[in-house]
Image (cartoon, rainbow over all chains, first blue to last red; front, side):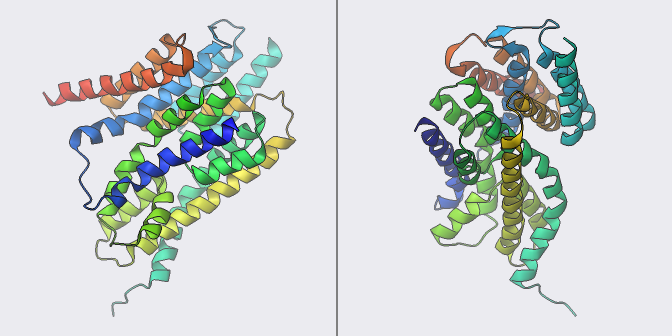
Amino acid sequence: MREAMIVLGMAAVTMLSRLSFLVLLESERVPDWAKRALRLVPAAALSALLWPALLYRQGYLDLSLDNPRWWAGLVGAVVAWRTGNVVITLVVGMGALLILRWMF
Amino acid sequence: MLTIPSSRRSFLNGVRDMAPVLVGMLPFGFVYGISAAGIGLPGWLNLSMSLSVFAGSAQLAAVQLLADGAPALVIILTTFVINLRFAMYSAAMAVRWPPLPLYRRALLAYLLTDQSFALSSVHYEQQPEAPHRVAYYLGAGLSMWATWQTAVMLGMLLGEGLPPSWPLDFAIPLVFAVMMFKSVADRPTMVAALVAGAVAVGAHALPLNLNLILGAVAGIGAGLLIEGQQHA
């Protein structure tokens, strides 16, 4: 089953990273350039995941009032930025989405 | 009189120090459980992903990508990129721990997360003479694991009961937003996030969700450039 293969693949690549230096005979230092690049991964990856999810609706860019996810997402993003709190962001963001969907 | 803590005490210290972090992890696990149930995959699959991968941001990304119908290779590659930082943690822990048989190292590796790494690193830094380092890490890592899996299961149970028309998957981008802003701490990370987001949005027409990887790579590249300029 396709999804089971995906899960296996995900588990394998994750354990690979986790075990990597624990199995190398000498724990080699991570080179500086790699450290710098790895430090930037979370910010880049999360951003790449976040914005298309808010802006696109079934494949096309939708910034109109018809796309409640975009506007609720903006609200959520501001709350996320200012509070850094997951629960508050979820409550406000989901609330905004539900209100917008109900209104339009 | 100096008492040397037992390994059991060190283990419990790990749990104790992890406790405040665990509370913050609950909503993440919850959101994963609820959204995974929401996209219609069987419960055993969602649970086995949480058990075998045990990495929150990768799990959330996978749920989002699965719902989008992304190809298997993209999901696995995205997971690999997101979780590459574990290799760094692996290196950091390897120099702190004594030699151990492979099966033990595999267990310790499995428990490696942002939280168990961060907590243990700080502990080893602040108390370098404290013994039973592995016991401490196990306390931190196991309590994290138990909490995460419990939150996931509760979320799944709740998610199964909620009506499918509810936009539960919207919780994932919201969680990503919180995590993204937290990860932006200086100019290079801010540039990385801005460029990655812009490229991922701009390249959205590309097939196979390539815009994701492209965006992440572009963001990292831009961030490295800015860093290079700062040091010049």
